[in-house]
Image (cartoon, rainbow, N blue to C red; front, side, top):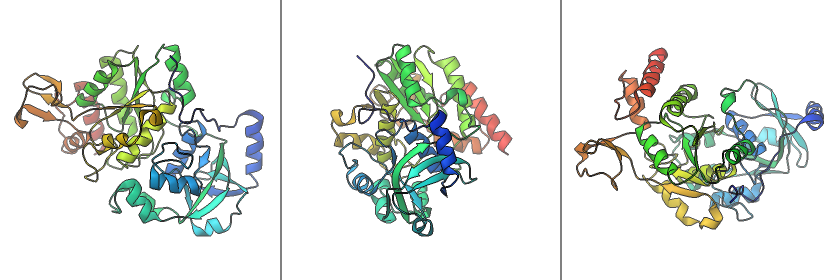
Length: 387
């Protein structure tokens, strides 16, 4: 049995190297420059390294409209979140379709060449309603959408440079690398755990239960752009490393960062996270309570239910759906309603990243039923330094 095939059957590679890179860098010096935001920088890396296979660039109109309306690319492949490059009308008017541009960071660092094959307008409110399930600009993903440009540029990209001095270099593994690592470890089935929070006891429980049914576990924390009140990625990484050292079997678990920006699109983003983890070589993904949610915009298990719209053949990757885990006072261990002997709420301690942040904001150390003591110490020390 081999590793799961990439989405679409082929792992895309749009990273230029050697003479091709040098030629592209020289060509870029004479091209129209377009500065892109941090979300688009993350998207560029994901496209170029194959994490967004089968995409080879920012979506053209047919793919964009099909994804928004049908949760599929124009060719029928499952895809749930538009990967687009938005610019102002002023910038769009200066670009001729069929020509190349140089994409740079907001500080003018050259990142990629792009052949602009299409320019098209779109309805932001309609995208918000279909993709995020709300038009409320208090939703962070909707707010970001409303602030972006009025015209979308579609076309292929070729990455010239990765961002310099990125953190967590020892844990930045592109899909081709994770796939090779899984094969070297003899893992044929791998479950991914998507997270933007420190691993608390409920997370630990879910990941270990999931690991019992597969060969390996990929702890894959998102380290792209998140909300300002989310725990910083460097603090979270310290927590993950502690958990790896003390509470997981290192022969069965791998830690690697996921360089995506968080969209908080709930059910749609759950599908997106699954398709990308499939490209990293994962055969399964943990989908727990309110996956990729924010506030009260989505139902508790809506992110699990959306997977039922597709066949297993279409998805490829298997969603492992878990109920809300809690600490059971009667059995003195983590459990769900399926396994706990406790019937009353008084015997259950429910855990969440939100509760962790609330306790830290009050200067309180989370209890051991909530999180491992070594992790709690890292979190409270981080909070104290932020004061």
